Length: 510
Image (cartoon, rainbow, N blue to C red; front, side, top):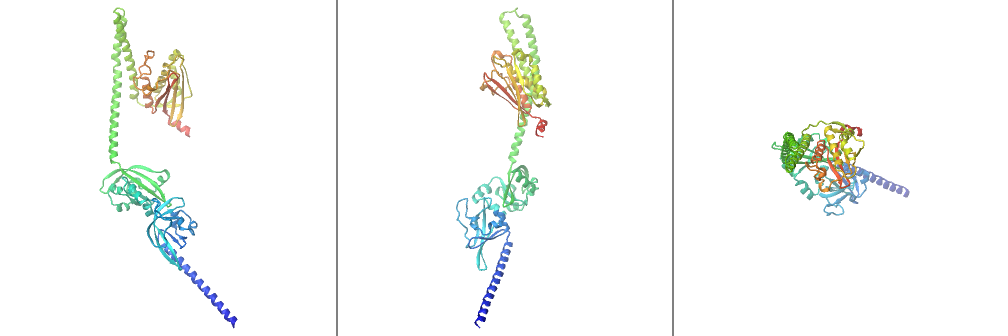
């Protein structure tokens, strides 16, 4: 009898244990179902935290924001990922209070990429199967985008910025607008927030393409036009900056009214055109004057020479001296007018550029200077020179003037001159180096001015001071620059650059 009673008692205990287990499992399934329903009811990021502050469940939005995989979050302490308070002002507590409901509570999310992101959370206390949990809901990405900037920073640098600022998501929706944008466009803020980028200007119509450009190449800067609420068309400068947040793409659009700049640009353009016309008129006057004055000066020179030949020795010594001064003055005037005509011809001559072998230019220049070279025992060498593009007559004059100067301003030793070239970016850099007298440093910035001679001693009285000015004019017309480096009693090197022809660049990079 005792055995039977004992058996029944064990059976009853096992039955109750099994029954309670089934009830617990059913309740657990119901709790899990409730959690699933709870997760489905929100589009925001949601976490479930137990009383030990361990994460027991997260939804997909949390994974996107935090940057972690699910297995990296489940079972971990929430304090490893969320910081309460405000880290920008260092007013923060060590952990979030989870034993009470929270509303719009300021937090910072510590993401996997070691960045912090400001957000706001609401929390509720829920009870499942006799156990309490905290359900944390974090605002959606668009709201976080607006709230991510510290309040004071946002107020003074964004809301109060003189530039109109719009934030746009990857669907071309405007999710934020500051005060300046409202003033610029004339619409209410809520009206702008209902717009899309295609409503702003034509350049932003294909928003997906614009975002791709900014993500790949950086800021996109351009000028456009917008139409205000009252129909006024305003010229604006736009800057589109890419921002990647929470694995979503956003762009910040800066707009600035450039109406005043356009007016100023037109004034500058008109003034530049006016200066260009004045410059052309001045060059034309110089050209006409240089050519027109040559004939009367030539006539004065001819008759003065006749006086010198016919009456020299028949008058007194002072008369002979006066006639000599007149002849020398006329010859000097003729030289000045001739060089001034050459100088003005460079501007008046049209740009008839062609491919030219610089090697041939150097060879012909030396042939033209053969007598001067022999007279001064000059030795001139040059490296292999490239093909250049320009006016053959002018480039020949450039080489001749520089080489002639190097021979003329020699020391008491035979001139040694070398011509070389090197490539720098898109230019050929030529150099003509001599062992001559050199140029003092205080005269280096004056030598390219018209009528400014290198030397003033009687040894070089035949110069007019136009040679280097002509060289500068030729080089600048060909799109280059000219300068020099000199040491007195050691020598001078003149440098000038000429653009490399496109054909040569293509062949070198192909």
